[in-house]
Length: 388
Image (cartoon, rainbow, N blue to C red; front, side, top):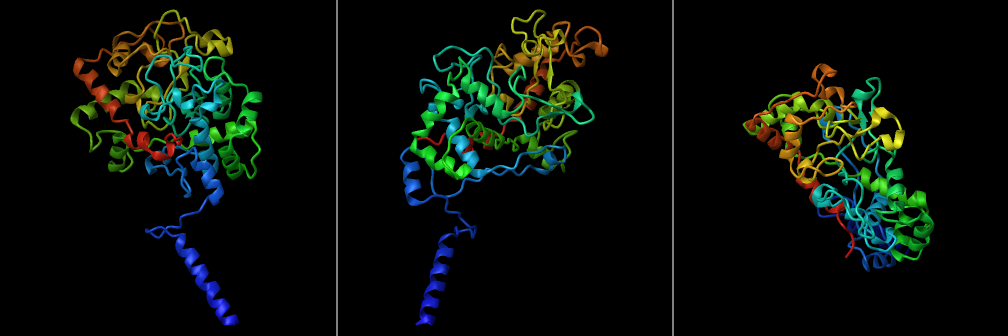
């Protein structure tokens, strides 16, 4: 009898183990109980397999000092649901993706986005997932200066950025004293917070922690440019083998004229923030509103240019509708503002430089910038809207 029972137990274990294997032989982790899964699937397009948000950087990025956080899958999934949930706004009208759409590399296609009561934001929505490292080595050669969040860099972390956005009186208008009890009565959050934090308690810190985990998992690393660097044995300089002749010309022009701020390897910035000569007098004074220092008037965050093709319109106020207009500005129209970045001055201290690109060079620059589009990233299911 004991032998029969032992055989039955072993057979059950084999069947159970086999049920956890996918066709490819990988272990498929069962995440939810049947009741939990039923609760989630009333509202969300989720199944019972673990969504993997871990990040593996290509060697050419890692070798340039790019770094990523270790991602907790349960927190990232919770952050994804929060990111797309209208309940985070005061009147259930908007969510984070309203201003950061995946198909647009998590940016918006208008100069100023609409908030929860249709009032327009004061600045253009910055793309998410455009960077894998927030260091800007030029500002502090000894260790790198952190490129912070928002155009005026008023937030030091994604958690702080999320906190300010949710409570902003134009964007989402929701205080956490209202938001926490609002989410506490939502059944799918009982499941998701328990998985992410070990119990279903909902707090301000847990909400922003989960959002940070999700945003940190957004790494764009598979553009035509990245593929070319890989084919070129990790070397981002010189002609790339998968580029057209004009794209390689654009790459060379970018390296000579643009990389001093935006970074040659498209991994790290060389400048965290700068005045790029848009105006002689700025209505929006940029970082000055945060620091009250005169040297910060007209100074704004320098964005990483990954997926730039998808993120029009451009600049903090969305004044340029096309990449061609952006190139025209740098070619001929940089203004002599007192705080103009020295990289944009002749001999680093004179009048604004004149890049004077020819029409062919302008076309080449735009062609190169379009090689920075990562089509896999904007179609990745794990970043998509999970709501039915």
